[in-house]
Image 1 (tube, rainbow, N blue to C red):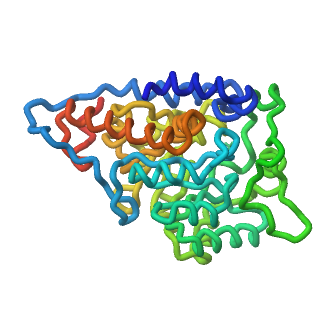
Image 2 (image 1 turned 30 degrees about the vertical axis):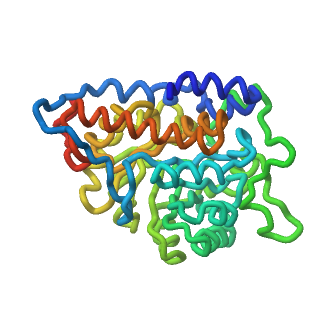
Image 3 (image 1 turned 60 degrees about the vertical axis):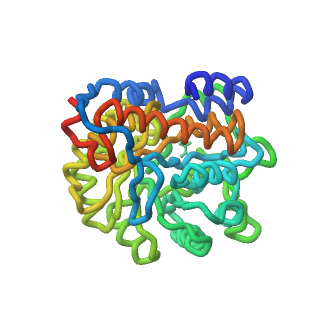
Length: 350
Ligand code: GLV
């Protein structure tokens, strides 16, 4: 799969507003571009003369075995790009042996994803909303549906300014709704517009205490997503996070923040072996996956490319993105003399 061609082909199938909503970032999109560019600034230092006739990509996340260190990041509104929406993406992730992270603002509900893909390993992306009852309602539904982790997004006290959405007038077409938010209160539908929803539902007063609060309301492990500094990562772990996801929300929040590749080593060093460390943002090649592991990530999460695959060919298209990236990663392992994720140490990059 040529990811650039896949994106171009998806663009042809989608409205300009939908394409731009997914492809775009905040303000001048500096971070959006740097997320991709930063990985290639790390030069690989391969070993030679290691027996790489077989390489093993398997790993585990929060104690569960996974086929590879490549998982699906949470992204909003999948039915914008394919009628099967998140049910198809979840199916693709399960077929690839990957975690599927369902967004709070998904267009297929928590329960329907679980029903459509009972064999999947699903995580639920969550905000701690100003309305704590809404938050707890979502947590309880994710638990009841068999989801196995909560991914708490913490880089969104307010929504970043996405200029492309203003220019295109992006809004959800009729019939495409944030399925998880329907029915919370009788007679009231939460806003379907992300900007309005964020303004009323996101809680800008949140502190690190939210992690402890959430722990009291769930038995699921908590992944804190959106961390870019070692000190913050250490505080999240001290507050009870089982994992920290280095992320800048795909360059969609504060523009000008450092690329996730450049934040990763500091966060990994601060966390040590007290929690797992993941990264998302700009991963486009198997060699990027190898770089991420070498810089201290246990796993990477991929967002936009999976949506381009979904737009082109539904579950099969999304699965091909994941399995091809895994095949590229295996080749990168072989060419770098790396036989397992554990062997992808910091000496492999400079
Ligand atoms: C949602 O979280 C978005 O970034 O659009």
